[in-house]
Length: 294
Length: 193
Image 1 (cartoon, rainbow over the protein chains, first blue to last red):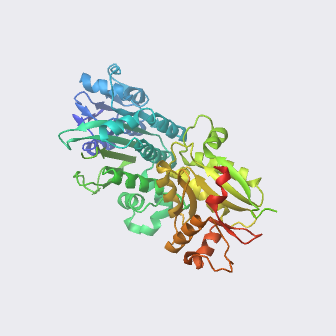
Image 2 (image 1 turned 120 degrees about the horizontal axis):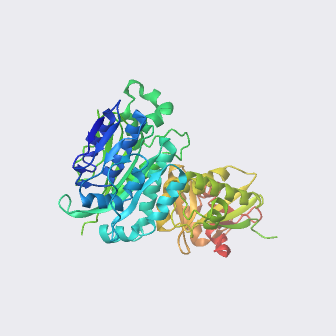
Image 3 (image 1 turned 60 degrees about the vertical axis):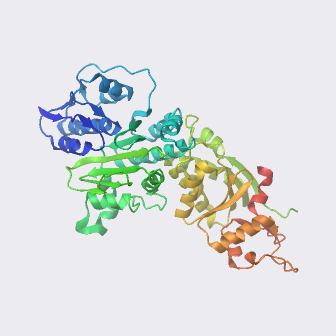
């Protein structure tokens, strides 16, 4: 059996090595060992689901997931609806923790996205409390829930229209006291579909010749708004997400295949482009929106 | 006979969304939803006569994403922009702060222009336009109606150049084929508000 050790902290800073590790497994069934997980954010949770999906698809059998020993982490996973989604990806180890009934900063529990009806469901859910969290934790105006919903709608539509595979989305507010001294909202949207290079190849690869690859495909879509559709009204989703994230001084990064591209605000030290990652299917998008500075 | 041979039509997009697409969808998001709403609007326009003035009301829409703005605003305008068989003039109502960014962006991206109510009883010209077109439109908006062939020569300078003709060509102003008078679209939808 292959063993993928889940790091003790799984968030947007550590998901790439984790996904690289998951991409490399082949042959025998995989065990994802998350027993020592101490901290996980929406990126980490959704990354676990996509990693498990890829392993299951490659090996033709459901991987096994050993759930975290930490009661806090188990409770948090339960609160985010992780176990409901993980049940279709993993054979789960121990019995899942119970959902906490206390107040929560969850904007959006982990939600599977495979069709347009799921995008409507995501937008509906955001109207039930996301505005209060954006306002109280980030200091955004109450109307910001509209733009926030538009971002989520567009980014989830990317899965439906381009991935040709399922994906997941989740969002949560945190106090990044040590890292930034402010609250942030973390959004993760990931799929295991054909990725940016696969989506754009038929229409655009020829003009790039030998340069065509994950980096050029990501740059074409992320920076220049290229899309596989000839309609000039298409390809605007990712551009508008970038624009709104920039207005809120946030960060956005997209991994697809062997590359990750990012729009980096001054407070973040993420490199704007990373290449030579392990080839991982689909697209993995991470967005961080910081609280307004007082 | 009226100086305004225009068939007026008010279309509540919120109602179209609920009645045409599905009552389960409360928001104008996803491209297939936008496409279905646009096609329902086009069906209603087909029965509106050869020359119509349509007030497309977004007031009851809570969330409008870019895909739907492209379908329900930009593609709707494109569908009729060069047709003479069916001359349609549009005013978009309820393009308030939550929707404005999406509507402006899709108009500019598609090289279009439209008259929009951006606050109660406040109209603006949105989309891709020249400074001269903008000035001409504002001038017409202030006057509400002008007579281009006015022998008194009282037309403001802004309305004397090619920009004015461009507003007519782009259907953000209406010239009566009967009197030749030119009307601001906001004035013409007054009774529909």
